[in-house]
Image 1: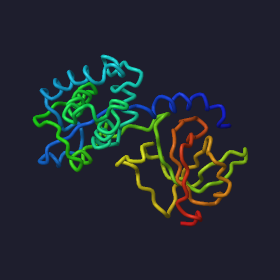
Image 2: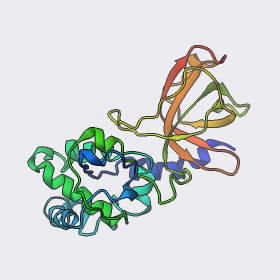
Image 3: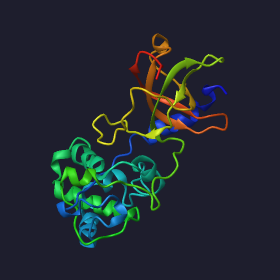
Length: 251
């Protein structure tokens, strides 16, 4: 398999999945035992307020229905981007960047209410307590599917660690690599996965478009972050960043 044949597929995700932007909200301190958005982390009244706040502040960019806009905030695209991340990640994104160029023009209270609305739009159940702005609480609430995290799909941002080497076709790959884990392109993300400095996995994953040329790191233990491409001949990662974890591949 030559990775160049997959460029068109990954380009689509590089321009759509990575720039998905939404907001998020919070819980009350006595709700810290909750671990999932399926526990009921917002109230019906708060989601109703969020509907109105979304119409005022968000609809001009994302459309009247967040599931139908250019960057959908509901449905499969929402799940692909945010699954296994936390409400803290969501809240920080909307608090710090939404609306674009006018982030401080909208009160945080409205942004929390919009989050409740988005949770409702994505089918997460209502509860008895409103979201509140508490980073510790939000970081403890994971966004998952009803039965837990789903399988990683093409276009998901992932992170892997392995030994940098060349394939016989000339492509770069990570050998003895760990399983891909969900990651974020946001350097401030609180959910960035930790990678071990030693040990190895059993995967071999081809690297697409590593830049600059990583030849100087051949034989080093490297961590790659990028877009996953599922393929019958083996998984590929369209590389966004590549960093050295250790100067040797030895455990």
